[in-house]
Length: 254
Image (tube, rainbow, N blue to C red):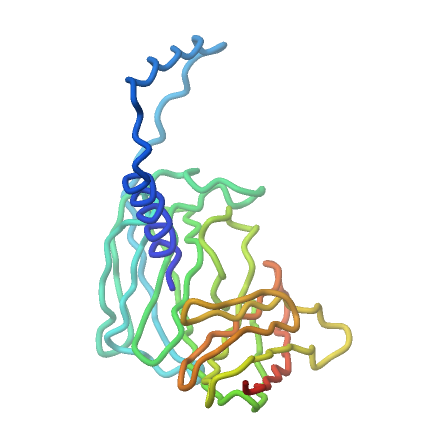
């Protein structure tokens, strides 16, 4: 699920809860206090700059993916989108303000969140850091991997994999690898991840789907027959090499 969808759902839920509570105000709210004048000069508004992002979208084998949707999310979760051509290439113009996503040193020029989606692949997202108006961003999508609960699989998280969320500053995100698990019966699903090498960092783990989910390592949740759940392994931003994990799953019926 995309971050924008999650945020929209939360906002809509809060608004509906307030509207349906029956506890509307009985008197007009007091007028807001006028804020004190600024202590110094008011900074000028950020300059809106026109950018053009171009690049190539491929799969794990380096094969170009045609028909993939590429979005440049700005202000803060809307923006233009295009579709890759037969050679997997795209070009997308967008307007944004430098410094709008300022974070740690070296990331002050982040201007958008790129989101790439294609049928049969896990979505990919990362910040666009643009020192100039011409930006080149290539994306590598992973095919969706599914296993049946009770099976195991190796998941590798690479430095150029997607960021897990878009609600942190660039340089503070976590990098994610994903595995989809199908429950063959009702019961309790347990998912656990182990690094294949002892020196690897232990990934944080989240499993979610069909109105249930949990975090930790291991994670145990109630599941329903035939339902697909998503296991997400998260590692801190700044990886210099790929790290692999054995993901073991088990299910205990009622």
